[in-house]
Length: 88
Image 1 (cartoon, rainbow, N blue to C red):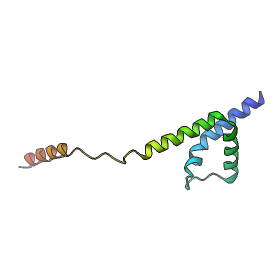
Image 2 (image 1 turned 135 degrees about the vertical axis):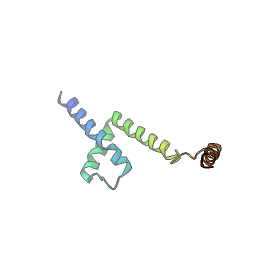
Image 3 (image 1 turned 180 degrees about the vertical axis):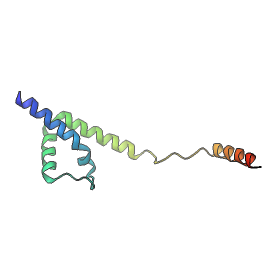
């Protein structure tokens, strides 16, 4: 009973820190002890390892996403024409 409970608590702890670990976020760094604990858990927990892989896949997908969509040039032209008519 203790082992499943301990694993559940460790998985929860890992899930709350895995993004910071993968990003190596300098604004919220993990301590060396936290990194060691997280890495040792990932070495034995298939579920948390999959979670880390999912985060990495999502991160790669988002890195290819453009920062913002460019407006449709025809729509901008129609809008400018409409505003010009209002102003005259």
